[in-house]
Image (cartoon, rainbow, N blue to C red):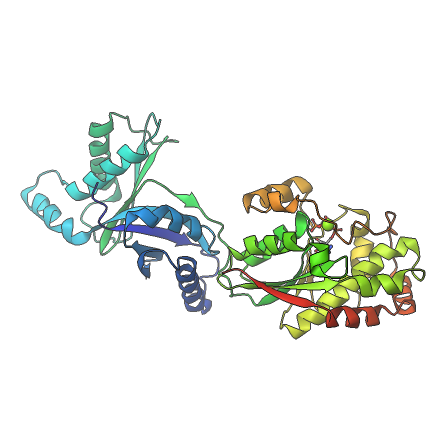
Length: 408
Ligand code: ATP
Ligand code: MG
């Protein structure tokens, strides 16, 4: 097969394309695509007729490039394709049209046949789907599909099937190229990284908060992470698992991501003997949220993100979610609040976090008293917080925070 012009063509989400943001959205998207492909044999990344087209030096890197593009937020479909220059299509076509004979499209058909031979697998039928971005092309989409379909049928013997075909050959007519492709991989859509500002994610070692972070990243935010560890040092707490979680989230980010490791000892020291058992869990949450809030302010973050899901554990009642930090000005985003564990787990597996999330880890929440108050009242909570000097604990914890930069 002549794969002289291997490309990857990707479509992007329409959502942010309205109005003045369009140019900014596209610039970011293209930059993020370039960064995602760094180190691979890429000739050029261009925006072509409402699509992102990546020209590759050779077809060998196509699979790896496609896999990386699937992790670029904003892209919807990613297809490794072969580009046939219009210069190799149009003269032949003009000749056929002038002579009134059936249009040959021989270069396009040759590529379609080669791709069908490579990718048809066990398909029992197929379909050709054609799109014309260049409306001036002398053949209609149907005519192109018929012509290419005939060629693939002659080669493979497979019958065409319009409804739910086993296998699809796609033809896309652009102004300068005709693209042919058989694979279409679904990416995650969303908004390009960096288009929505920064957030501070409270990251535990569990299943939920990495998914919460990922869902917000998909909306274009750049996350920083804060993790509270039990023990005297990160090494003693063995925070490698947390760093691994950030590392895999960083695969979806064009820039390295910061992780703040914060000790919980300053809280423990003040809470022991002062805090009623049933308030320990919600006070500890307040300690986390207050600390995250202060750190977020310093790091120009505009919101906090947690993996809370309503009612999943006793501390996540509506009352408790509301009572923990009535005085935190920054919005607290809880992207999982309406999801159930099955959905969250499915996402965790989809983004490749699950295996890491279930690794054993001594989370500082697991050492809290098991019977938290179900309906904490803000004034009681604040009274207990004052009695134990919770704000001093926050200051001390922040002073002992360490920063790790991970990824990219
Ligand atoms: P996760 O799977 O994210 O641990 P969870 O269902 O276990 O969530 P909790 O442990 O009650 O729920 O925690 C709720 C949220 O509080 C977490 O999603 C996370 O945002 C935050 N959180 C909990 N523990 C920590 C921690 N040690 N460091 C930072 N944030 C934490
Ligand atoms: Mg947890």
